[in-house]
Length: 423
Length: 123
Image (cartoon, rainbow over all chains, first blue to last red; front, side, top):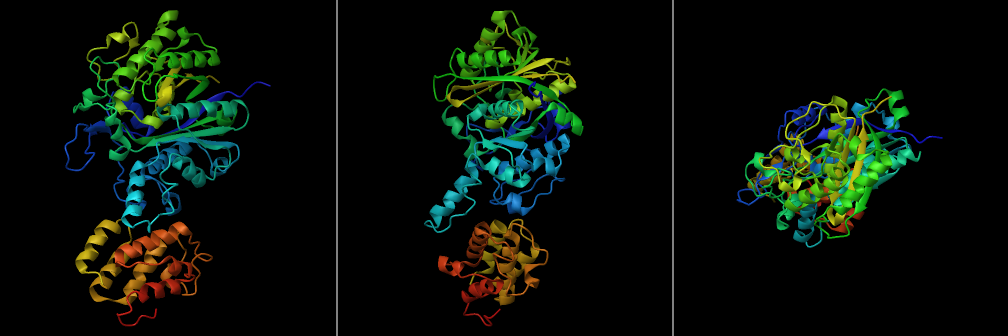
């Protein structure tokens, strides 16, 4: 018996470049940035002034009771009371995905539906709860202080909200997390364990979730949104953080077609490998990422020359982008292949654990709508990229095969191969 | 008792998103020591924090309505309610007080007992 083919059959977006499929697609095509100035500490001038902000939401209030979100979403207090702010983004993105995929409540509340999530948890809420505990000498401890703050908060809350009875799991490999979730989700369907796997990533952006990266000198100190996030540029000086949420459903193709769901792309294979190098810095030669790409291509049974476009992980850090450039050369250039390459983080900012599912969803849009998003903000290409075809304007060309890279702390490297769905 | 100034500050900082009738009742209690308004505040906060909104407003339910069995109050609703009531009214509720809470009237009496210097402490 042949293994099921796996497709992407629903998408939902709450991102810095748009809160809908249409808006995100337009932002990618027209290279609209989602990055703007923010105050990490009110009234205090800090060296980091930019972020990929989430528009249309207000989650500054201490509790869900005071949060605001765009019209069109109706959530009960039962679903919100143990949610962190980025859980609200995740709920909205997942609602979009459910509507897009035409999934019924019964299909969601099934043991054939799995849920894989990732986030960095909610340092904002954690700080709030810890302050409450300390200020009250341990007398005020909210029962929500664990489930709404730790890294698994999305899977805890979303599985309860949708009554999901298949596998429920969280992934914690930093910026490789949701790409890894997509890979394992693909395996679950291929192995016949589930008909569908929902993958959700979400992150907050703000002082508590973001500013620690400044200590690592990983954040750009630029003040101009059009110069701050510039992957592969010679003068790049760090990433710009972004928040939001993206939800995506992987499904076996027959189930998706039978339901009339939109088929965005087919997932053809994936691969992963570690760097074994450093807790926070990529292997300088990109060895782990190169192995991940080779494994993904082998799993997809594709030669490097068949890949039309690579959506790079490149976050705009000097070390990370150089490492990825070398990995790309070792896989593609050395075999005579020359795919188009870009990093959409120039427009969105870096969504940390969410970035993998967000950018895979961008690739799914690109395959379905026949374009390739560009790498914005490059004024002088880093010489380390010489020989790589980094595209700096949108290509209105249909790709047949796309490779998506992600790399996380500790040298977790994941690559995913997508193809135009043919059925 | 809390002052009107404190009450306004609490409304701005803590009652964001709460129904207007709760903030109005809270302000009236703070300025006029009206215990009926105190009941409205306490029961309104509980209703707001219940996981599932009741079909009938709690204020219209019998005082013998059981918090856990009839209203589905869980530890999260209990603690959210207690923290909010303590903060708004500048009182402290002991764990033992909470263990003994069974009905809506128990809750009303407990909170009124902290303002026993005011008239008419029976709900």
